Every structure is written in structure tokens, then in C-alpha cells.
Length: 455
Image 1 (cartoon, rainbow, N blue to C red):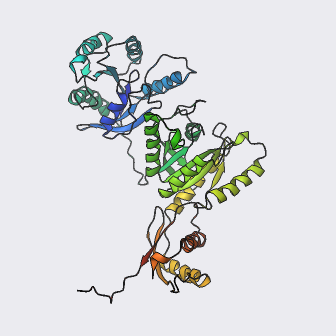
Image 2: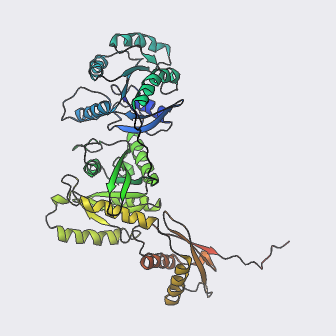
């Protein structure tokens, strides 16, 4: 089991920059604005031949527990409790602040090994701050520059003895022996739809920061979880994402970065759960997010949150299905799951729907069955003649899954009307029961082997 190392410190000292440096990827958002990170994020870190799990945390601030900053502080407290080692980071250019001194006391009281890092030490202006850090009583500060990668060798030397001792004590290492990779599920939607609350309810713990304020989530946070299905246990990786507003309303650089992070989560997901607000469902932005997920080739599940606020539930769910059929014709049969992230009502239907569309997303159809269906579909409704010339579709085969992709060979492929292409796609959906996932169909002109190039 990987040893956990937490990055802690006040806001804007470079924790997320160091996190990205250690994991070798730009996973965490980085900006000059203090307080960008609001949830704790984990990643596999590597320095030389040392490997460990690193936890990025929100900046430590003194605030009432009910305030947003106070709830962010609770996320850091949990990370410190879970971690085996803490890396306490200060800004060497700013020097030691009263807030640094206050949190140094907290870390000393935790009885966890603490390594002190003086970040942003690449310039001469940092020397005074490095000397001040000796007064924190946490040992000698290690000058580093997370942005430029300086001081990583010294950090390796400081971490190596702790990690070696902890690995020696671990007599029964836990090996991951399940060949099934985690099912990647992205929870997306507009701001304040309840995405973080839903993830917390699914996994059964307050893992993500929530509250009435819109736009709390900024990074796309991944959480690993095990869902016990009827036939087997499914390892799942849930991605909580930032709310996506209309492009015209996104003004700040930070929000653009947050939306970009959410878009990347959609691209790397296998199933996308679009979370709608039951009181304002199927707004234009909801439809655009759904269309984006489908164009990326992801399987789609529509979840209607805050269902506990709806009085006439039978009439409302009927309206939801009618609106989905009318407004999302590109996803006929997409599951619609009414639920309440706050109370947990209806939650038992979400993961069965997710795994069902995931199976459809991986669907493979036999070539013989496809061509039997094609012959029947063409005899029932033949392609229209264009400019007095008939179009003949001779053969169809599936070329890939995830999503299901088909190639049909036909004459004059470029002249096939879009309406007839949709007829074929919908016919594949109905004949082979492939719902709620994108189906891609390419019409390819068959080459004539007897035609030679002119010399």
C-alpha cells in the first residue's frame, strides 16, 4: 500500500505547483490567486526511485468551521490525519508569517514526521525567509523551487529515510490483483447542481467540500471507490468537476482553467453523468454539456438532482422523459435517474444505469448479424436515388468499440443524405439494443479493383 505524504501550508505558497512537479503532470490548477485549491487531491509521486502517494490540500486558514475557509481547513485536517509524512511549505520570499507559526504548532502536535520546505527559493530575495524558517522548530528548512524543479535532490534525501523505515514496517503489503481497471465516471453539470454532494453521498463520506456557495469546486477531483453490483464488484473512479457556465459568462482566467479541467475529465471518462437541477432542468447549458459528452464519444446518464423538492413526481418524470426525447435526439433512450444527493433517495438506481450504458459502450455485434440486419433495413427502406442514380450499400462491419463504430461500403457514399444515415444509426440502436451511447457510422466508397491509374 502506497505511503501517503501530505503537502500543507497557508494559501499561495506553491503546494499545487509542487504537487504537479512530484506527479509529473499538470493535474492541479495553479494560479496566483490565493485559495485556488479547495479539495484535497491525491496522485502517484516519484522522486528518483522513491514512489509514494502525495496529497495536495487547501491552504491553511484560521476561520470559523461553518465558513467556506473553515470547511477547506477541515479537508486539510483529514489529509494530515491520513498522511504518514507532512511536507510543510512556506513562501521563502514572504518569510515566516504568524499564520505559518500557528500551523507549525499544529503540525508539531500531530506527532507526524514533518519536513519543512522553503519554496520559491530561486532568487536572492528568499535568503532572509529561509533563515527565518529555522525559528519554526520543525528542523532545518530545505530550499526548493517547485516551479523550476530546484532542490528536488535535497527533498529526496530528506524523504528517503522515512519511506524506507515505513516500508520495512509494512509486513503485509496489499497488492492490487484485480485486472479490471476502474470504471471512470465524470459527474458534470452547471454550478450548484450538487455534484460534490452527490459524490460524497455515493462514497458515504464527506470527501469533497460542499456548501450553498456556487462554484466551490475548481479542480476535477478523482475519488476511487468500490461499487458492489449484483454480478461483481466494480472498481470505480469518480471525477467531481467544476460547474460549467455559459462561455460568455466565464470571465476570470481561473474559471476558464476550471472549465478546461472539467472538459479534460469528460475526455478521459468512460461514462458521463449529467447532473441537472430538478427545478431548472434541461437549460441550454445542460444541453450543450450533454452534446459535448456525446461528441467526445462518451456514454451518457442523466441524473435529476433535488428530486425531494418536487411534489408531483409522477407527472414531472413524464415531462422529463418527453423533454429529453425532444431536446436530446442524439441520445435516445438515455437513462434518466431522479434522485436526491442530500437525502440519498433514488441513489440505488444510479450505478446500475451507469454500468448498463458502460456495457452498451463496449458492445460488439457479429458481422453476419449486421449484414442480415442491413439487408432487411435496405429492403424495407432503400436509399433514395440522387440525380437519377441509385445508391447501393453492399456491406457493413463494426471496426471498434468505446463507442460502437461501424463502416459500411456503398456506391456514391458522399451523396447519401443525412436523414438516411440517421435511419441506419437508429436501426442499429433498435436492432441490437444499444441505447444511450454514441454510435458512429462511416459510409465508405468501395474501390473498384479493375480501375487503374492513367499514365
